[in-house]
Image (cartoon, rainbow, N blue to C red; front, side):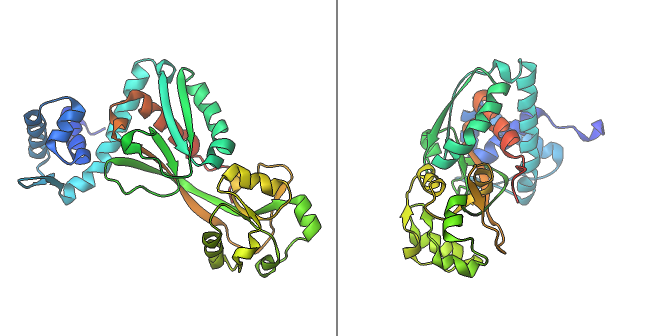
Length: 301
């Protein structure tokens, strides 16, 4: 370890990160429960110590310089490590209690989250988790949820998003349906099969077209905006659906279509608001979710 290279003060780092995320000295002061002049002095001291300019200052706002942008990621890693040290020193995850609201799609909540919560329960037995099953993006800014699991990265600047991994999906149907209808041997055959929709048949048609699957809305004979209901229709032998491999490969009586078709991929993002840096409870659950959900499942292609 090159100790001589570490000459800055941790409080200066906290002030820099809080200001970068809040976009102002006043916002950083509120987050850290300090005065605005104190935050300003800490940032100035850090700039002097490092010999760089971290912010472009105007009369109304602060904007990160290129050097500041380059440093933010490293500083955020330091903050996360410091939080983990604090949690460990104060008794670890078992000492954390209270309620955290997690929102995800209804299918994700019904099929995948129980396994995740089993792991969370072992790691933090005093936590209470309230699952909000919702296919719409919940408003984290208004505290409708503390943490969201989504397939798109949020654009709001006051939200914190962490990319976990890409998930894969393929076409699935029940074995009974395929035995009755006959197993397709090519993607061209699929135009003669029934499909299960998730509420927007035109969008489903468009999403499958790049894979050579030429369908019409008439192919979607059954469907539901509810993910668990649509999956139940598949399990009851009513048609084919594009489904996450985590769900499809773990469901008895359902099989993946054996076609020369690349996997459908979609990202998984973990999203929360800036209370992540001040709430030990949310920080812990966020980190545990990163650990549990960031693992690539064995069933993924």
